[in-house]
Length: 100
Image (cartoon, rainbow, N blue to C red; front, side, top):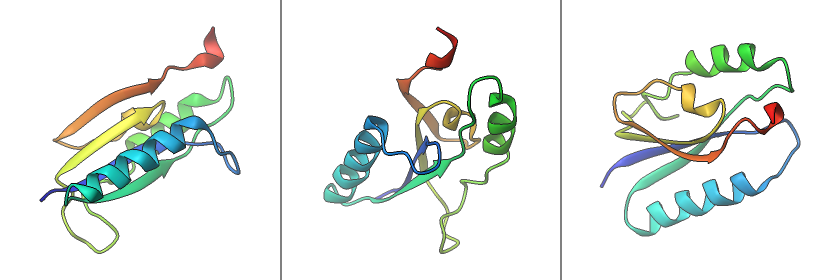
């Protein structure tokens, strides 16, 4: 059994398809016997992503809310893939669509 953090970003008060996917991944991991939690990082509007990337890069995902070590991080969407963890994989769900 592993402790997994599924990390995605979301603008405030917005519920998009990427959150549906992230929650489904968390639910499936739990059904498989893992401890999994959803971590949401900030996302800024077009032209202001640098501050969101910096805040995400500085986010500590090495421990869960109870102070236990996180074994695996799965990130899905910009800028959430900027989190740092030695066992981090990115399942790219969304590119930065604001630029195209």
